[in-house]
Length: 66
Image (cartoon, rainbow, N blue to C red; front, side, top):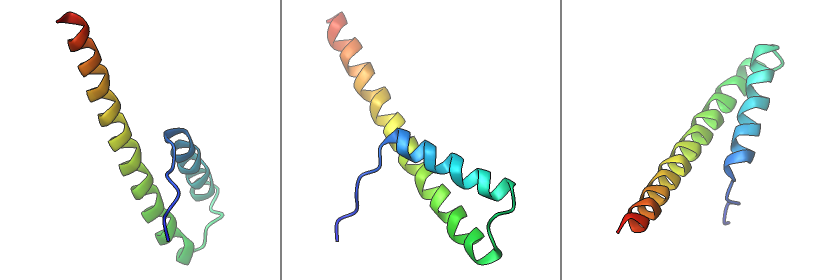
């Protein structure tokens, strides 16, 4: 089954929601590990998107200067 691509904004929103639950102690021990893994995956998605965007912007700027 194909997974839905998460946008940067969706990833950030989900990270914030999970952090709020952790801070308010809404998660039990079983959920905590799962949610920490999810946050880690979302952070990786965000970092990849930021790196790709940076590379695209640099390419555009270089193309403009040539």
